[in-house]
Image (cartoon, rainbow, N blue to C red; front, side):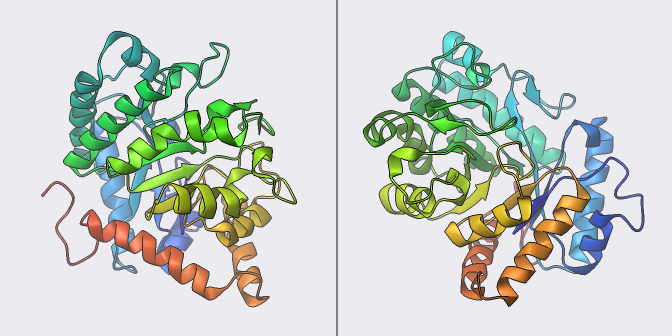
Length: 332
């Protein structure tokens, strides 16, 4: 249920946390950042080494993910098409041409051994000062929906896993969850009529995974306001019941500034209905998260049936994309 980032030298360091986990019980996935990425040949070698290590102890391949949104948010710069930012596409292109470009990018990523893209961004953002402005297609929910559906459809056709983000719509919140708490001021009606619309379109287009943000949503009226990534009202209520999503729910990185104690956040997210947790940077925090989950299970706070449900969804995703040991690789 974990998707982990790792230091540049982790694979070549025998006693690194990454190698310890790969040797024992591999994570469900890894996420590559700029620190891990060099030439296309180096990336391909890295992904092959990761998968080989996982295959020695696990029947399923790793989800190997990147943030390849376009524009400034591109972890892979060589060996893939240069995709403009979402805002540039929204202003200068059309959904069809954007989808064609996304399809070319998806096929290039798969050639490098990357099978998951943490994109597209389905947020609706109107404020040019927002950190998400360039990463979003439009201030109009209908236009965002068209682009998001086209991008998801193109990635799906290529066999690349799409992770649509940042549910239930970071555009509804002031602030940047990388730095600290961000709270959505939108009413429940505004959320439904604006910010949820592109996610509904993404689900209809076949998105297999949705990333839940660390924004707070007071409009839901929960007794204790918690971030969306830890909220049953968001995950079970809005996403699963209202939008009918049946795929994998992934949290945004648990090392972001809005989170606080990552171990406790991990447990709360799983209890709320999340299926995968991103812990993107610190090996120490990753071990804290793992220990917190184990402690919660032993203490009865986190039911094993909930873990079975989450693992089952992750395995179904991998089965759908040919990532089990007895299946062909994606794109073949």
